[in-house]
Length: 383
Image 1 (cartoon, rainbow, N blue to C red):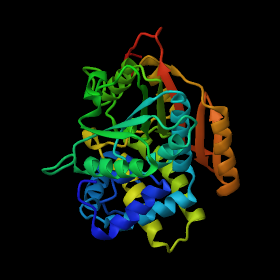
Image 2 (tube, one colour):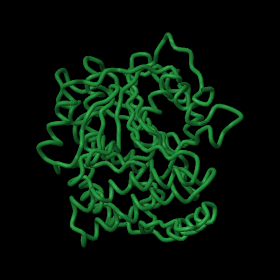
Image 3 (cartoon, helix red, strand yellow):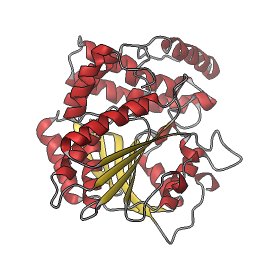
């Protein structure tokens, strides 16, 4: 986070670290913003006029910041009632654990701002493995934050993870890289020949600009995927927001309406309506993201989701091929959702992706990839 954690939030933060929660960038990008979800009506209004009104409203909702401790408590509620993140972390951690079997050095390259809550569970798994834990190195790549100390949020995360690894007895190093994601290549990561290299993105690449903005060269979205393919990781773990917004305001409005209606319905069924943490979730997370997807244009429009099928095509054109999901892990995830969460949560498979949703609508998808040595990389925009 760009600002130091306020005193009242530190105890909550440390507790969440030990319990294995995670606050990925979809949440953390908006954890300091205040806003409310809104209901849109287009009765007779021109598309351009509605879009301008929406953008002005979005800007007005991002002026104030909620206390960090309120966000952390809201996220605890979210993790305890919703399975989406827990399934994502289970799949990622178990995949990393499996690919590192029998190896002495592990290097995880993580795109996007995380507070590190995902990694204690991985450290626990590695601590308890036969033969002892490997040397673990995490390289976290994030965008610079505003102010005079653009990397402070990552430094604090590194300190907390280092303390956690020390408590578990796992050899650990943390490296922070503050840069635009499309500028990062293998030479920036200091990869050692004997390391297991894992690259992971959970739901962050949706904010990369695509060919609708960048037309004269490869889009940042394609550049990042091509660079990951050139890294030749032992596995690339990807989680995506399954939302196709299209390029017109009307198509974005329609898709965002259906998508976020499902999310808000999930909150309505699983949480008390008068809950203060739920209100924070609605206004600080989902409302803000939905507003950006509808209200903003050009480079201000950062919530550029695509369906998992579109991501599959992008990945294949970037020179990646599917790495089969572990059947035991999939069964664990399905059993967890079936036995511990509301019956309306959906967990299924399609095109070798693990799919998650609510009442039949697929909201998130997960897959694993490796570099395809026979492929010739091209750009999504060439087709």
